[in-house]
Length: 347
Image (cartoon, rainbow, N blue to C red; front, side, top):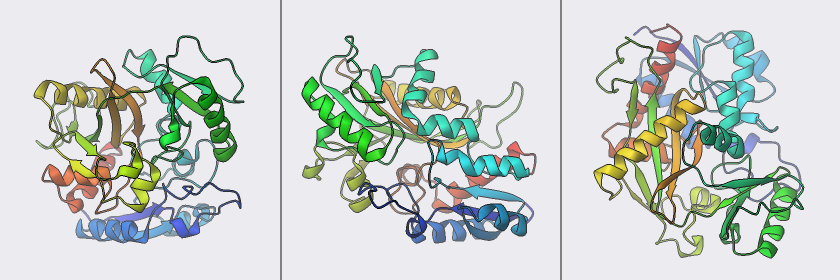
């Protein structure tokens, strides 16, 4: 493959403009210098020139000066209810190719309630839910306690704590009001799934009829689905069994990451099937990580999809499952780049 000019677009934690009353986990989703340096090394090892650029308001000028062949995008965006779509929208306007999902899929991925509506419409299993915009809306009589509340448009476990599990309407009203005020967005309330939690990482894109996969790394549909991973939080007593932003950012190596998860083949295949179905339903591209939890009936239910999964070389879930599957960090990153290059006809 020829040497390409790859612009690496990111949002470093130290450059995020935070309001004075930002919640304590407001930086959970943003990038560390360690992640950016690892991505630069991986892309350079793939034979490419790398141009690192902060994905902030300067990007309109810096990206045109850089004139890259393609962008490797991990920008979360600094503000707005579809902030992960802002950089893709800019690149679309400028006609510059980029890795990962496009505008709509990132917006759906960030808005957990909208993604659940799409999945429900597609007949995919997800827990019954209700969105609270004001906090005083009548509770849907079909919902049964215990319920679970979280911000509608955040990831990385933000806004999740032991108080997220709601046992009665008094707890619901208090937590919903706190979420709306703290995160300045609607609260998503869904029936609590008490079973084991899994995350499924995948690479690939749906192939048109008659098109062969790019290599034997991908199946006949165009996907490589990594083995499901179970996160055992028993070593982190204060987490209360929940994969919170505090666990993910302050003690990421404290849980036990079980990959492959100790499950039977039937459940493994169902988790993988649901992950691909969830990915295709929102029109995602190249990479994603899908979170699934078992309900009280023992069946798996889709919780969230992350179309911008973390890529820290040591503790990000997608990197862990790839490593468990024998895929090095360098290969993972360059597979993502190559998937995008093929979509744009550049490979």
